[in-house]
Length: 120
Image (tube, rainbow, N blue to C red):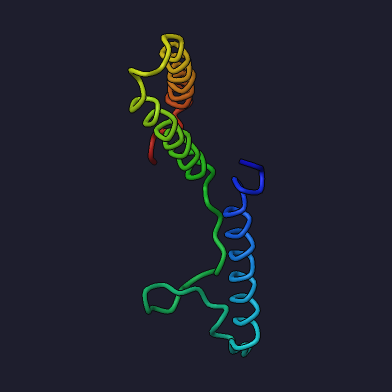
């Protein structure tokens, strides 16, 4: 098998995806209404008119909490296929995963000590 036999379906899908997304964006720009109104810039809050400013500052703790979630979500993505193929893997693969889990446990312990996980 040559390079083109292996990757031709990927290239065709990539080109088709770019064409479809580009067509959708151009069509939305050409066919969509673009009236400038005062009501368009108001944020939507469940049918009620918003009170106060349109922009508020978000505390960095929310971002840290989200990053911690992503870290452990990625950990799950790595551990699941490893666990499925565990019996077929060589013995050193177990120690690689133990090392990986120890690094993530250290990160969790560090975040716990810094009180990042406390919700105030």
